[in-house]
Length: 573
Ligand code: M6R
Image (cartoon, rainbow, N blue to C red):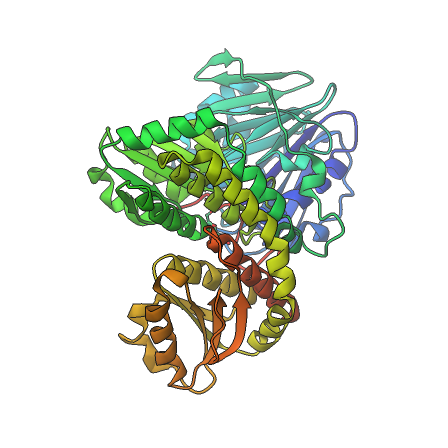
């Protein structure tokens, strides 16, 4: 949710920032902008839309940039970041929300003529005022004392120094021998360096040829970490879109997810077995993985509660110190999830993709799903990697870790075949869906979670109205919407085939066009997605729907990597 890039070095900052912002566009693409240091005043360029609308023609060797997902204030050039102080000596980019910005305007900035409707604009004005009588570090500290909310902030001063501070939103420093990068995640600087420092909450930093990090008035040492992701992984590698590349990467990523260390798995097992109650949660696609994970863990004999994180927060008092929360997240930065975790005293086991993310750092134990950078806003390879890791936990609880790992590797081997054997049906399905206004997805038990995930993929990519229901629930009301030609996608899992088939027939006999998914083709289907028998069939079932949703999006002229109104990591509640 909003991407930040900062650069301090020998080269033109605007070039480096532009390239970095291109990598962060998945975090928001309502508007973009950048600012570079210049005497006597800062230089700024910004525009509505993507970063390509901002021409990097401003010179200077230090600067900041931003790609925005709008919260406070509409999508306008005035509201685009960076925001600049009254005397144009400070420019600021921000990710997050300043909750008390109205009080700050009234109490500290009465004389300021605000140019935007954003909460962010108070920050450059405050900084400029505090810099009048303070050192840079003291000025930042005074500003932090005033701000309430959650923020990752980077600022450039007209004199060239780069500033960064964070609370609740991520910021990472990338280091080469003579350059510094500040960014919301590591992808903007992977092409330059694999050396990174993750700032902790309440850290603030000044870069002026050297870098110094402080927390609560004290200078602190933060470990430099080597990032194993490489720049290649974060590029399209010849595909038209990241999404297609990420769908096709899944044979590799599911395998990588299955290669967890035995000791990490045993620690996860200990946490689960020793907990009084286990809760598993996430948001969006990760919540469907969590729901499937709950089913896998129940199959291994664990009692597990599952609910989406923003709703589970209303039950936070139920979650006690001796319980365990398993938190599933691609980004590890989702505010709804982090907010729940802040409210509970239990241990947290993270199943997370982004290395060094807030969730990864704040959890008692973490299992990285190792999907590599997922740039497409719609989650694909992270979902199947999450399923693989959750299934592996279940295998560990059943003393079947090695056997289970082999099974997952075998499932991964089948992904290409499933895409190949369904190529024609997936193409036809995407053409058929392109003109549809409404689509329903039904399934039972595991099939219901599959219906929910397939539904979300289609909805967010194609903008077609779609809804998912438990097969048994459909006839309790929604069936009234089915008429001749209404598409109903039915997940026919082998373990409850008859019941799922009956629900499908209830729709078929009212004229629905049936799209079936499973090992058995049924004669009533207009289209069938065929998957082989497999203990981890969910991984195989979702991939053709990822592809069909991707193709539908392209056919409709949408951008599958950047669905409208969405952002990759949702760092506001
Ligand atoms: O980074 P997270 O996994 O925590 O993100 C959770 C959701 O925001 C995310 O899965 C979202 O639903 C995706 N757009 C789905 O494709």
